[in-house]
Image (spheres, rainbow, N blue to C red):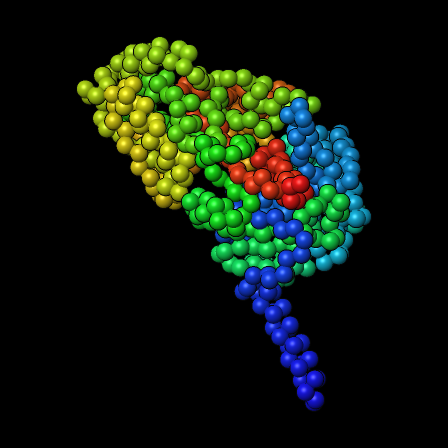
Length: 543
């Protein structure tokens, strides 16, 4: 072999080696074509499996890599609108037996990042995998309204789920009954995004490497574990004309301070999870409620008058300010962004109105009433009320701040000593399930746009009823709502159930979820969906 040929061979070998390293995610991509959007939204994920996405923090990554049947958009009037995505159109058929068929027609232009067409069977595979007990997904119940769900879960035979591919372009889903949030929450969810059976079904490490095909605006390119994820534009994305960024670079931070350092050093142009008082911060919605939980089987808080005293003294505006992450004072248990009923322009919270006192007006009078209530409960403040602890999950800075703020309020207004106590999540959940606590603070995210998901736990005596609350009228309302096929009547019963729960001072909602972001003024085109998830497709340099 001549000298020139040896040089060419060595260069080719170097290129092959470089490609191998990039494919394994062992080094950063050295070449960046066009505009790269850089963002820090979460700590480093272990895998990219849609079935196991449980937090809003990692959702932006999945939204970049995958596209579902439909997607959400917020109008200028603030209404949530469902618009086509992989499904270009759909038909709703009400059957004589009370079931409902959704028939989705898929776009022929919808493609995976390797150029193959997205087919109806890709959704069938993903949905069956989601409900299969062997998968172990925490999101399986998201498909509980689909016919055959209970049989599939009980038998382990996911083919019993009422979802089928009529042909490559047509997906049929049969629901047990009408469901107001099926399109807006189930068909937009990360957990129900399509998957390829020839990848997810045959390659054990498919969710931890860069070989996974996606059908979103971006495709995997380089994954440096624990540090960053580099995505390239998916040239096969059906909505390519709406994309401006050529690449998307996620950098990971384990703490808010580490994320802020990335932003301050100019390594990212978008940062999610800053304090509300940060200069330039934009507040985003988060469908979540932080609440004080009272243990109804404890000696102290089995007393309704004591619970009411603790509730009456709460200054929700002060608690929200102390939490500092864009939270707003709660006016009920169910947050905004939850569906009320079909064709209803108002969401559940707007329809139900304010059930809790917020603001300074009447606050001093409520505190006087609270002191009277605690006296009726046979306690006279610091004279004989024992010191109690208020548990919270140690991994939640928001809950820690809320617990500390509440403790300060109760010390000032009721003259009782409450000691915040952080526990690891497993220990925290165990103590609540066993009834081994007096007070606790926790956050509750609505997994879908159904108020039932936040209300149903307190209608039974299983492990989900952390309050150990017992109310026959409440159980009746929840039971009738669960069995009702009249969605308007169902919504009315859920409103009554929420009102009853709060009238009994069973728990004290504190704040509705929120978080804040920073976007550098040199970048434009970043938008957020109605649930506050950033979408980076159209990001571009500001003019």
